[in-house]
Structures are given as structure tokens and as C-alpha cells.
Image 1: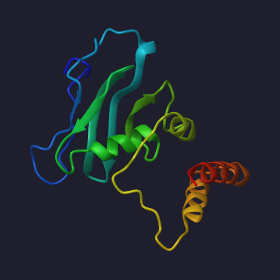
Image 2: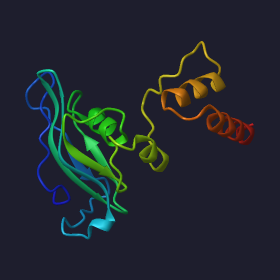
Image 3: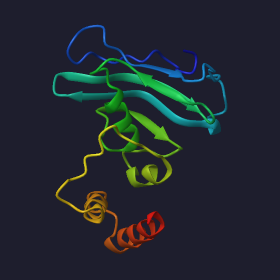
Length: 160
């Protein structure tokens, strides 16, 4: 996997042999010597520990503009944890990440404004209305109430 500057080492959560693999979906691999202005995602030594459990272990990864990557691995390999760190939804224990030139730990809202992410389970509350779920999510993300309300009304009017 030449687009990955070092082989990712993702520690198993439950059983030995679980590793995360990152590879271009289309089979094209970018040069590791490509100019840094084409790098959209870069990690160096990205690590996440939960107590004694190492979920992601020193991941080095470069994804260049125009490339499509898939994170592949068994349950517990660290795929979701890696994505959460790239989005600034959880902080790495060590190492660093840059997404479109931004540090997700220091500017998670800026990263989220530029990156789309669709989890397999969104986690909306069934007792809330659609608007209430959006307001709640905006509040959790520290988006000002007036900005959130304006966006909700705008999007809601386009969807109907």
C-alpha cells in the first residue's frame, strides 16, 4: 500500500489478528512523494487508547486529492475510532491528524463544515421531532442557536 507511509498498526480489541487496512477503492495508489498541497487526510502516529485497550496504534496515512479510500477490517479493528478522530469527535491519545489542512482536535467544527460523514446508525431520538433532533445536535456541537435555527428552517423548506 504505497499511499500509506507506514503500514497501519491497529491493535486488536478482542482477538489477535484484527488489523485495519486502508487502500484505494479504485485500485489506484498515489505517490507518497506527491506535493503536500494534494494531501487531504494525513495522520502521523495516530493512536487511541481506552485504558489498557489500544484501539488505534500509530496509524500513518496519506490520502491525496481525487483518491477514494476504504477502511477495511473486522469488528474491533479501529475503523470507527479512526474516523471519529479524523472528524474531531474523539481526541487521539497521541499522534496527529490533518483533514483538509485542519487539525480536527483543535477545529472540529471547521472540519465538519468541509467533510461529509454518514454513520450506519445516526442516533436520532425517536421521541423528538425531526427539528428537535436537529436543534439538539446543533446544541451539542456548540452551534449558535440563531445560526442553527436559520439553517434548519432553510433546509426544511427545501425538503418539502
